[in-house]
Length: 325
Image 1 (cartoon, rainbow, N blue to C red):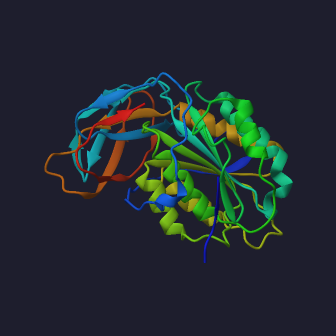
Image 2 (cartoon, rainbow, N blue to C red; image 1 turned 90 degrees about the horizontal axis):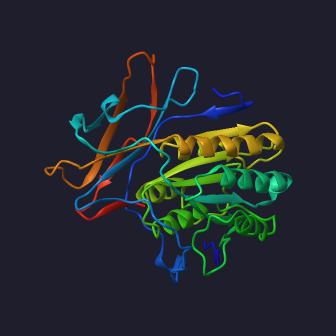
């Protein structure tokens, strides 16, 4: 399926962390998806409420950047617009997610091709076995890499084929690719959703602007991780775009210094996702529709100073059933 665009860890790479999400209901054109593809069957992990449930994935680290596990709900405080909220859902285990691999195949990325495929394979192999993935390949055209009858899969070989089917070369429609991936994720009921963007951050062919793409990701409750593959000879690369996308959705950006480090980066992203806590609360009844700010604090006696990464807010929608699958 194609769309043509119209008019600290021990790893030796730089890592930029924190910050987070805002959710605005800007949708991609309905023509992007004509028919809903079939999905792989899987037994879902479900948290269900009859009212709105605000779900906040939270990663906690110590001053050395190591994951902090073993915390309980009592260690966390959640505030909405400065007011404390009662935590109604808390999970400290590895909750399955839906992940999209969004891969730049433009001419500037040609030399990274084999490392990108190897890194994506490493990411899938280290993910939760119940995670489900899909692929969006892009140059100045956008293509869903999986067969038309498969929306999501956990099969490593199928994903590798999906990554390999697109030829390299041409211009770059990065923002449009994020728009397509975000729209695709909204077809999945799981509320833990991530995109792994592999690109140099350049864009010279998109219909959408950066802010449009960011808002669409935020509307889909997406956390974006980015692997920034930079080339000093490329005039179009833009690491600042990758930092903005990740900082404002609660993800993280990595800039590997060599092809070998791409695999290490993808492994680090998989570990990051699997070490998140999942916190949920019901928003105040008096809250009006619009953007609501979230702040998460964590304290634990004997653990020293702890650092939290989560999204910074959400857009309140009409009350509906909400699930984590």
